[in-house]
Amino acid sequence: MVDQEIVEKRERLFGHEQSLAESRDLLEAYSYLAENGPLTSAEWRAADATDGSAKTQWEWLRDHGFLTETNGVGYAVPIPIHVTAHAFELKLEDWERGIEQVKRASVGNDYAREFSYGYASHRSVVVDGDEIDAARENHTSFWRDGIGLYAADRDGLENHLESEEVRPPRASRDLLHLNEITYADRSPLWGVSA
Image 1 (cartoon, rainbow, N blue to C red):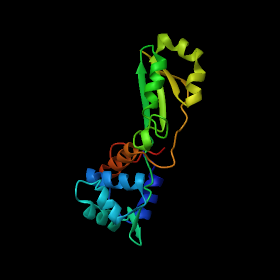
Image 2 (image 1 turned 90 degrees about the horizontal axis):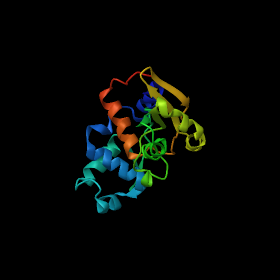
Image 3 (image 1 turned 135 degrees about the vertical axis):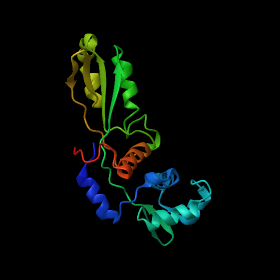
């Protein structure tokens, strides 16, 4: 889902509709600075996280407001996150494995190595309706990690436990990429408010 208020906040913050999704190199460069910064321009060029075009990308990020520079030190300007992503792990019966696997989609947990990975702010396991009782008996396994539980059968989905929102202090690389893609192409999700 896309939160239109956050999109408007972003446009006021940056003063343009430019997206980092227009270039994977720019997205990677911004992510590198956000994860490792602040950096001096010399440190940036030495790390060369951007396939040999570090100076050009530094200048582009600075000129478009994604990087602020003070006395030769660059700081990533936080990009407002306007998307809310949900991850669902489908299991016929092995709900325990479903919990472990859906955790990998989340941001800010043990699986999200150095905050580089993860995209989902809501996580749920969906099990076959005939197998829901075993999962429900172990609801604390879901509740402890804020993971939702659904049963699926021919009649549809039945929610047995709501997921809790997981929001890290900053976006992971995967969430940032999803955010920038939806911003750039005004995807079908555009205009749907949380």
